[in-house]
Image (cartoon, rainbow, N blue to C red; front, side, top):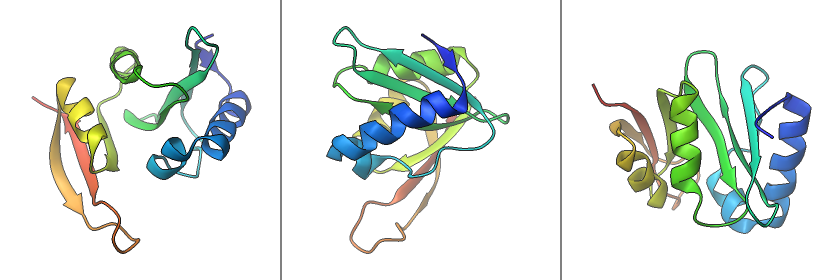
Length: 123
């Protein structure tokens, strides 16, 4: 599977957030109304995917299993991702490996939580 409708993506995404603390702590609650939705499954049939907004923003990247981040980011780049935001931590380094550069940083709205990092593709 690859491109899916919003309902199919949202079901897989919400289940992953419900049962996986790592995903729940590192992803947005909301699934955008407007975007292109991509859903894949790893060899263990665990869901993973992302959304790309009409302006190229990469959102809702998630993976039920571990070790598929490079695959997902490379697929997102092939499908037009140009910018994103994420919580500071391992995701920043993952995105940097694929050419994204930090251009802004803000305090998290929840005290004590990691800052929000805004990134875009390098020139």
